[in-house]
Amino acid sequence: MSISTEEKVLKVLSEAYPLDFSIGEVAKRAGISKPTASTWLKVLEAEGKIILSRKIGKAKFYRIKKGQLI
Image: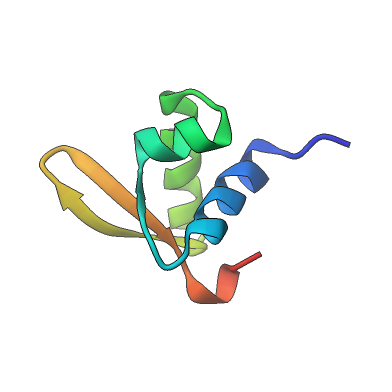
């Protein structure tokens, strides 16, 4: 049974909690491309599972919501 991309992204953020990660860091740790990571982070943010915690220049940093920890 393989883990879905969504689960990979949530796992990376869950293991890092309460830290936040940039799109590039999520991509690297999940073993996916930056565009794929970006897409999934936007989806998960829209679903209310993660939050956009801060922006530094063009970089966006995301953190999992406490109630979504896995």
